[in-house]
Image (cartoon, rainbow, N blue to C red; front, top):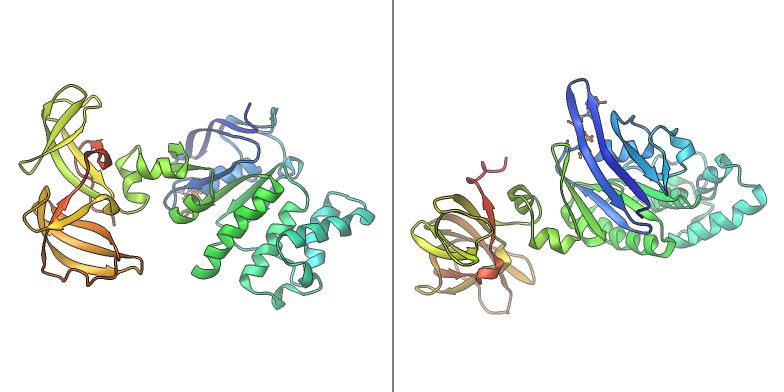
Length: 357
Ligand code: ATP
């Protein structure tokens, strides 16, 4: 049985549905991220789990207990928000101890628990400092220590790293995961940052317009996005519009501006409009004249270990990533061929979506 369960949870503001029919089961000890664009309902979902936002319909269960109408402080969950909201006039130690006082943990037991939590976030040497004497990353770690010191059954994180600069943010991602593993607390994190969700979560819940559209392990979402929106939102993708021109035994042929491409049949029918999605790193650049498509380099970007090429071809612009082997890169204007193995193509039914804004 799952540890935290949301069943058909819906939140309406008047006639507007911010979250619709969200059903989600989280296992004990799991790290799950809610990922999606701004306004898709991530925070509202987290706030309903925390109890700060009332559920319009549906139920939330924690460890077999219905908590849908339980007051936030009786749920006893650990919460870390984007703004760490530390008490400026209290030391690091007192900030962390505060949650224990609220829970009426006897004073004699508090010091050991606070020290343990501060050691976990590597701030035991800074217990006597005030928040203003700490860096952004250190403050965020105090907020984390304050949330985990009460040993919550579930830790809720709302964009916890978004106030940090890129480098610190990346370092904190690993640290956050490491701390979560050590404490073993079931964790749900809201983020709109795909790389962040992917690098630290056991499973990712993708939301679009208040609905869950996919729940899976990060690599599965990347390799098998269930909607064309997810293909675009999660990493980069090339989208090639085509029409099904033949359907055979388990395979189908899609005509890409007259060029045939072999894809899994998956219920496709003759004449159907489809979009083939291929990740840039799955495209192979070949000498001009070879490969399935011919194009020209329009631009190139050095990424360190890789080159990202922008290409122009008969189906419009393409992106391809090539490993940096130390050789001179292709120059803008150079003609190239493009190839790909059939297995890397994801087929989405329907017409090309509008260009992302
Ligand atoms: P972001 O990443 O920008 O924080 P989000 O995915 O967390 O976005 P929510 O904050 O959950 O999105 O909001 C979901 C939708 O519900 C949005 O359209 C928002 O405008 C709307 N909404 C949120 N709170 C309220 C409210 N109190 N009254 C009316 N509408 C609201």
